[in-house]
Length: 379
Ligand SMILES: *Cc1c(COP(=O)(O)O)cnc(C)c1O
Image (tube, rainbow, N blue to C red):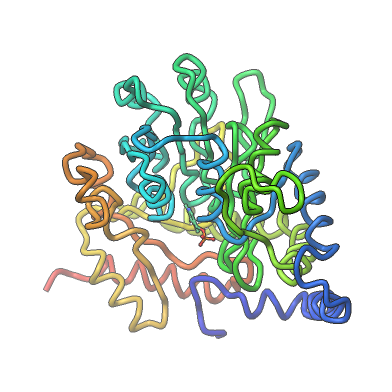
């Protein structure tokens, strides 16, 4: 059996090696390393795939979030509503810009912001909501946009884990995750569902004025060459990375199907295991399974992790400490936020390997290993 990894980037690369190698070679020959043709081409292709008006590439997903917040002109002290149950970048960027993160609890089924609790957290200083489509499940965007509209708030979707996911509105229409709010942000970190071979990111919007502001902020606040209107940053997608992404974007839907097939197999295998809660899929969210995350009930997840490691099965805890309990946010009153669902789930979750290259024998070994751990008689 091929060794099991959380994400098997090597085998995925081997399948597209000739195309990728040729595309990289082409960039080397052109020596247009910065803003070469592939950057513009990839942006247009992603625009079409997402059915969004503007795609602005940048250096990574964290920058995408930072640039989005800068482009909206948020001021120090403005409040931004976001989940604590996320990768740290979401909340870190808010604090970096001297905005105030206001953590709201998550829906216990979807791990995404609990829309019913957002309104209680809104104050006259609230300017934006930053939902995270965690693990590849889309947050409940339609009611969230209604709350945002009512209170005149911006919505920035952190779509780093859900590129390619669809959200279905009550009238049956669909939109891609990341194109529903005012701005969407994503990451092309190698292990993401659409990953490049280094760092990369992008920002999406349907609003022309916001797009112009984003382009300016991402490029040293420049409105015309060497005319700098606002304080910005330097954040670009490398041409080499764009060339890799141009090969992988047409395969994204296939990659998503492969991930969903692994998730289906896990769901079926664990359906009648009493200690396991399998991931929920809301009817309005087409889940793209960036992670396959279980909740363990009445079983020790660290002991399971250890047991699996002995069977050469990696398993990870995303994330062991929620943002509001990180030292980073002590000065922002982090631990004072009352987030019972976040706190409870933080102690129950464990993620199994999921990727585009999983073999049947690997999957079977993982499932049997999890089951044999749970079937052990207590000592
Ligand atoms: C990966 C990730 C980011 C950051 O992306 P980078 O490209 O690593 O900066 C932000 N938010 C979430 C939810 C992520 O998973």
